[in-house]
Length: 79
Image (cartoon, rainbow, N blue to C red):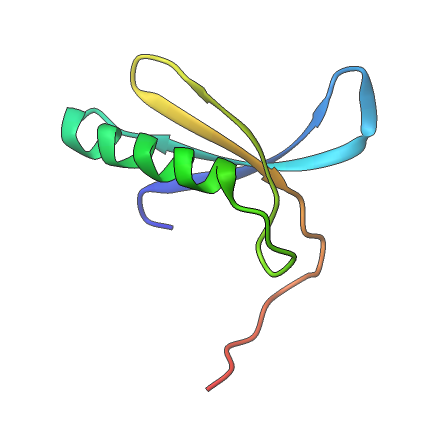
């Protein structure tokens, strides 16, 4: 999206397991707090129709969300 980038990653101890890391650069405290609430909700969801949440990390200006890597190529819009 416009407010984030997505990078492909893997665990250092298991290079075969791939993840998508969505990185948000958020300096505004209010927006950062809202994203933290959404991460808490995402971490509690269990649904096969959603991309699986694997964790999150935080530093001074960035929030990273570690998600299941979906290697399905381009998506199409269904109307």
